[in-house]
Length: 129
Image (cartoon, rainbow, N blue to C red; front, side, top):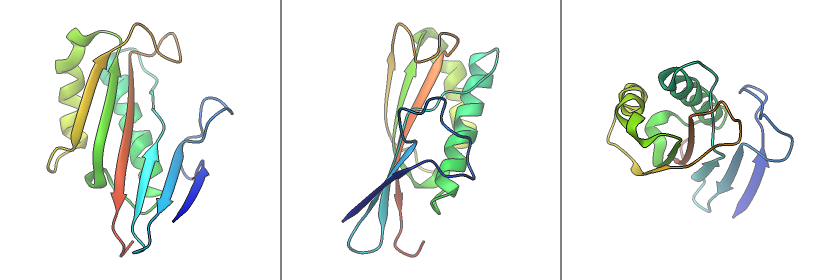
């Protein structure tokens, strides 16, 4: 098993130099697991921020030969759980196949004061990729 940490040049760069956006765990059968750091997005509304975060997630996955359909686990942090339906509407536009395992929780604040949502995922990349 080999583990590679990094920030793909083809995706938006991290907001801080203190973390890697992707940990790729290469498995013996040539498949891999991708662990993505939590992603936030810019925008005035929760929908805007959610859309931007999913776009970054898609770019990070693409840099490793994966798609949003390869997500097997998603963890979402909202600063206001009453906005869950708004977030869910955006999420359903990006995650159109069988829903991954999931956890959503309310937190008092996130990495950036203006952030209202942070999304963290794990994806499984098939061996043929």
